[in-house]
Length: 338
Image 1 (cartoon, rainbow, N blue to C red):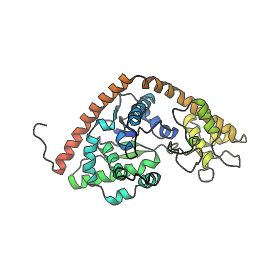
Image 2 (cartoon, rainbow, N blue to C red):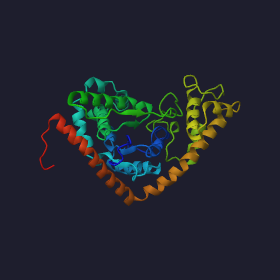
Image 3 (cartoon, rainbow, N blue to C red):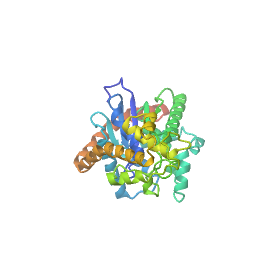
Image 4 (spheres, rainbow, N blue to C red):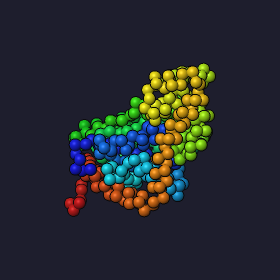
């Protein structure tokens, strides 16, 4: 990676909190292998972020392996991209403290995800939940990443990372690259199949509201057939007045490459049942090779351990240089034999 200086750097992370949803796949994971030919890509299983919600240790370890296997199954090549587990690189936590001292309390107070998660987990509104956007900024700035492929709901966190970088640069001199979010034009935010005004989330109590990448084809089709639409029976893209139909059309567009105009013509006069079945079929066909490869990779623990080890070594070697520079800038005394 160090040799390919002409390429810009892209960083993205995903939490190991259970099987990825279709929203995770469309909004982020699906794009990752496509980016690795044009950019220097860094992909991380961000297990430290998962701790903002109470985790069962054995389950977290299991899901960390599963998340890594899914990243690789999606087409990410650890020889082309840097792939690692966040907690295996201590630079993230070390840089996070420096950045915390350059972040304003008011900035963190305005983070919408803190408000949302606090409401969902009122018995565990912990400090990490409040400050995790700073750790996210450290994830990005530790590699001086230029672009962050995220869903639209995460754009606010990338903007915070950019603000922190600007403030540090102003106070200590040019240090960090200012990151930009990459947000796909369609499919950036896949909505719940049961409440299409809400984002698709695996934490939803209604299991019919989300598609998991681990769902079999019968389950996927059943969930799409139960998707909430409306009563007028017209297939038309209108997110304000027809959110359920528009969500289905957005998913279909991603996997078929058809325009909304083409989709409207295809399902003109045939009703929602045909649309739902077509969307379900397109998702099943797209996920089948990913699911097969995931099963194969997950069964090879030796391979996954080697990817983790090699990725951690690359990540720490690369990010340590940036951390050393930051430490010098803020005035820390560094050991002479380092």
